[in-house]
Image (cartoon, rainbow, N blue to C red; front, side, top):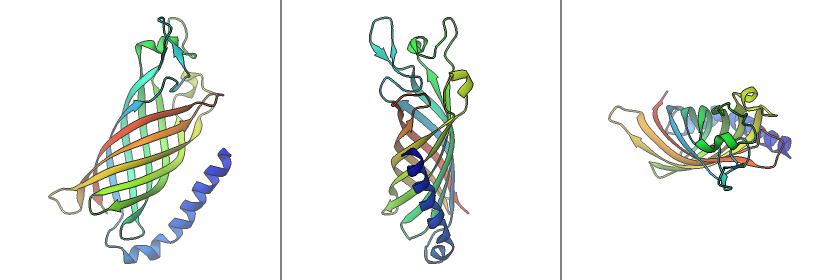
Length: 206
């Protein structure tokens, strides 16, 4: 199932990019690049290394918050529709309950959970400023060895909403977006790494 979904995503991207050259002639925009900062907040109690049980007997997450950078490319294919590609680097910071993680070693601090999301998708403008979108792809685990993970990459999907604010300089913008992101586990279990992500980026047209 995992391979089938990835193959479908990559096939859609290949077909769509094949039409970009002709479609771009008829749209009022050009390729847009954005570079920004990411702030994230995990959901549930099993992010990263699995469910942790603290000394009080209650389940607690080993990671709560993270921060990072992201790079986005938006390619117009219709007047309100863009194909998108995203690459990023996010580091999640361990909580005080991280010592109870399944992967924690006695008297050894749990390392950050560092990921590199690589996604493709589409973005639909609602008017001139608001947009909705969705992306899917692969997330790489940057420090697999330190976290004793079994896999170095997993399938990822992420719906999002956002707002584009034009700046005084022509063809420059502030792009802000909120997304829910889910990545399959890097360990041999059925859990998912899920988090809310907020990005604030500087964007410009080529």
